[in-house]
Every structure is written in C-alpha cells, then in structure tokens.
Image (cartoon, rainbow over all chains, first blue to last red; front, side, top):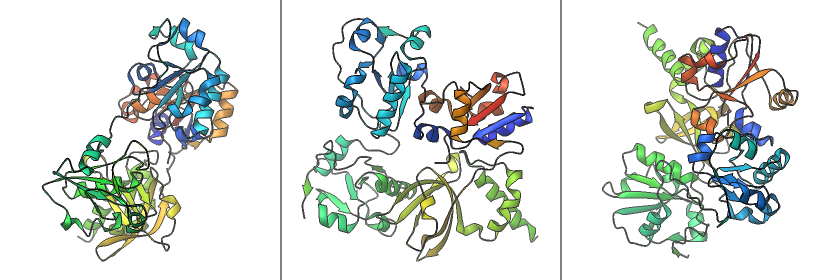
Length: 249
Length: 188
C-alpha cells in the first residue's frame, strides 16, 4: 500500500520519496511512541488512562479516562485487559513515553498516546470532565470479531444447554489425552478436519475451540469454506473466563 | 492458440500480486519476475499468512482479494523449507505438492515488496534520526483511516491508497523537493 502511494507521489513530481516498509509495527516494536486520533479517543473501544497525579485528574481529565497515576501503573497493570487498545496521556512527554514502553514490555500490543498529552487535548477542544473521581475500575469488553463465538454461548453449548450446537476440540489427540476435554465436545484435530467433514452435522451450528484460538480460527475458515454454519472461540482456554467443565482423562 | 492459456496464467498471477498490503506491487514491475512461476502456477500460492499451528503442522494462507479472497490450508513437515517465513500476517509465496488430496508446503518464501522506480526504503533508526533532527519532511500513513486513527507515527498525515488514487494528494506539501515518507502496516 505504501509503495503504491509512493509510486503515485513520484508520478506527481515529488523528487524525494521514500518508503518505510517495516511500517508502524516496527516503529512500535523499536519502542517509539505512536499517537491516536480524537475520534478514536471519543468513541473507540479503548482503555484511556490518565497517568498524571490524582489531583490533576480531579482538576480536569479527558472524558471517560481512568485515573492511574504513573507511580501506581505497575501495581495496576494486571487490571488492564491485555488485548485492549490502551491510550495514555500525561503532562510530561517523557513520562508518557516511559509508560508506553512499560506496557509494551509487559506484553501489551496496542498502546498509543494522546497527541500533545492533556494540554493537546484541551487545545484541540476535546471533551473533559472535572471533579472527584468516583471509580478507577476499568470496564472494557472486547467486541467479537468475525466468526467468533462469545464465551457465554460457548459455555452454554458445552454445558449441554444448546442441542443445536456441535462443539469441536481441534487440539491434538495427545493434548486431549493429557489435559482432558470439555463436556459435549468432539475431538477432531485440525489436521483431520478436512478428511472428517462427513462426521459433522450440516443442520447444526458448529463451535470450534483449541488451546488459544489459532487452530480454531483455521478450522473455522476451512469449515466456513465448505458451507458449515460455524464459529470459533478466540480465547486461551486456561483463562478463568472460560470455566467450562472438563472431563478429565 | 498456444499463447492463450499462458496469457491467462500471467493475468492470474498479476492479479494475485496486486494483493493489498505493503507488498503490493505494480504489474509492469513484476512482469519479469513472473516468468519462472508460470510453469508451476497451479502449485504456488501467494498471499497473506492467516495462521500457523506447529501442533497441527498446518499453515493457512489467504489468497485473492476482496470478495474473491479465500483461505487455503496446507500441511508442512520438517522437510518444508523456509517455515520461518510462515508468520501470521506476513506476505508469503508457498510452493506445494498435493498428496492424497491434501496440500503439502515444500518451499515458503517471503513476498518482498518492490519499490517503484526512484523510491528508496528508509529503516526505523534513520527515520527516528530525521524526527530527532526535526527534518523537513511529511510522513504519510497509507493504511485505512481507521488504522491511522488507532496508532500512527508522530505527526503523520493520513492518505489511504484509494484516496491517493482519487487525488487526495492535495494535502501533500506544495514543495515537491520536500521529503515524503510513506508507511503502512509493514510486511508482518
């Protein structure tokens, strides 16, 4: 994409055109800050964190920001959902970039800053809140992606509460033998999915899971291509969120 | 008559190469690179890796664009060359054999982006240096606007590819000597 634009710019007569092929992911990976847009801060499904001292947040903060002073960030890091896009701001650029680096080092993949920090937001006319902070609880729900089944629906099916669903465990036989399998679930390893499609009911919904979601996603693609009504669970099944009952070996 | 099927293949390959992504290439620039692949066109897949599972020894790759995009699953084993290039999200070229109706990846290569004539690549540290020195440059994010909104390089402006094609370049600096740096979501 960037090469296409660069080619067009060259045609328009720009003499000095370069392409940063590694792109935004490499920039973030190198530890350099990225920035977000006002509209995304206003309405995006994000966790917005004010890392300034609490009294400053009381005096005025970006609407819907959660106040976690930088000194407390490390203690609260496990309260922040790992797969949420996290947007930070401060009144000190160095502190802001340090916080970005801390979160990324801890495994957060989507961390960005408010351009110009709090002052930048105010001067851009962004909405603010003033007054005491009622709660510093982080409420964030992931929006399900294409083809994903919610944990609640998945749990209902493995609990036997949804007879119209056929659940597939796409892990290997060895994994199942060692760790057990959910109730009401059939083990079809990913590499057997193509050859065992005749075992699957065409008149039921199919949910696929594995250990993290990667293989389930692949099985989902394959089954969808073959006309099945299928969804997959994008979740590490060891997470507490999925407390589905397991039949131990 | 001999020529027709061949032309058709070349067309197909060009269409595949025109896939979205940083690696998107322009047909005329790839015409020379296309030839060797033509002979084995039916056993080569080009696209974006959608997933890899070491446990199931499977790779899935998305080929085609837009509504025609489809995911193809292949097996791999210890004899598969270049398995390190089968990284989720990266563009790759996979050669494969068909055994018992299933595809086995034999060679995996990264699909490298070709730069348009007169355009050079810039790496992270050099770009960082330009920022530090407050270089006179315009940094342009070529990804869709939604991605730009989420996380962009400092001071970057947004011109997604379709808008550039429709003439949104009016937001580029009037000075055609100024350095322009385009970026997108990278090869990975």
